[in-house]
Length: 335
Image 1: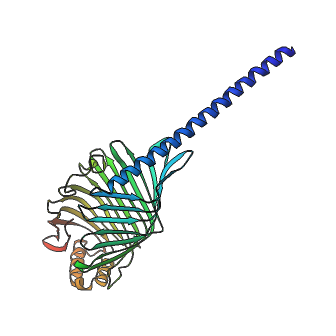
Image 2: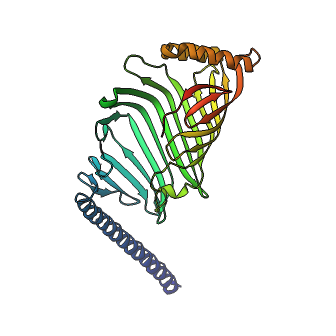
Image 3: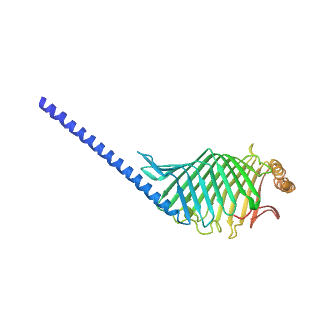
């Protein structure tokens, strides 16, 4: 009996020892594989970034490192610089942190610090900073499938001295989303408490959101990339563009649009506006130079609403000019 008991115990012990050895072996192999992959990734990126410095499209990631062991892998750098010489565009950003799960490398999360500056020759400069900016994306060998960006406490200013333009903006929160949807590209964006500083006046904050689909544009975020001249020639289904002043005073636009080869928009839009008199007063206060036009348009819309404070009207857009009936009421600059 004793001999049989010792034999059974010995068998269990051997199994536990084998299991422990197997666990240790797997851990060692995994650790070695992770650090090998991290080293290969860093070396590859270092070479590519160094090579880009000699090309027309360059990028740099200062003090690049790869971290995240054991279950994540991600890139970290102290600052990011981009220089696209053919377009005259350059940009600088603060520290970058990224991470992807080892078992799901195609999905990454990125945090980017400010301040940032984007410059376009000859004299366009956009300076921005934020409290938090986080992005995520899903990509495979055929390119990006979807991506999102969210930020809090955005502050920025666009300066173009040659055009006498100085525009500041702030937003409490904002989001942008893009995704492939069959052959089309879905795009959505929103701004909470968006306020614009025009230099001589500051517009009161409002909430803005947009949701649209661009036909035959899925390849714009794939490995193929957008065609030359995009978005010229694109067909857009504007599902909803909403401007919200609060207290139910909301104006929304929806309908099909086409971007002409010259960048001007054409199409037909439905305008659903609530709080006609409030919108008239806000526009008149912000842009006193067009107060008379705002009053005339409000009067026409009120007539279509049969005296109410809400109306649904049809707008025609022809080469950037917006018509209410036969009367031009606004102009949209080319894209």
